[in-house]
Image 1 (cartoon, rainbow, N blue to C red):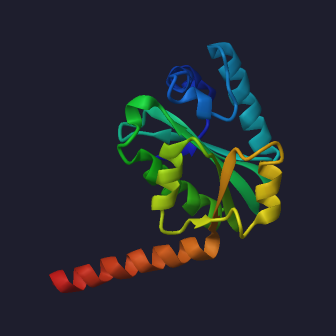
Image 2 (cartoon, rainbow, N blue to C red; image 1 turned 90 degrees about the horizontal axis):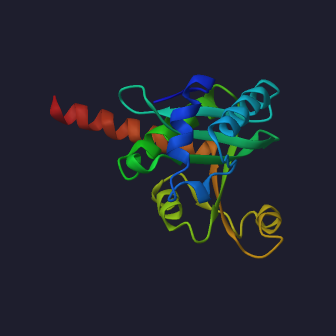
Length: 185
């Protein structure tokens, strides 16, 4: 579902990213294949320095379909950035990629909090975030971060995923699955 970034997938990802429904919401924009290749190389180098964590999202045939990233890592927290190519919207890939990424972040890489800043006009992303049972709306609970994101006028809503709430969600899901298996037996 996700894997470390590779330069070889840059052409495919650039073509997917450049779609008019995707491009406005991508954090690091590239205007050519060559520029995207350069940005991918910079991303991989930044990960080696511990500044971010970046993964390629794959479909069930291991084809690259988007990226998922944790930016601005500080004090075991960072900001999530994810995008999928237009043909893959609404098919559940985003949720599956987030689940795999959160598993890695929280239980392998010692991240404690994931923040999401979502543009107020990005209704698709806001609805997707609000569907997740482990996401907190954080405009009021994290006023300093919210104010910093919107210092030039309100553009973003802030969401938070704390490791403990995510862990509670996993325990609940596992408990429900165990109960279903007992009932089936």
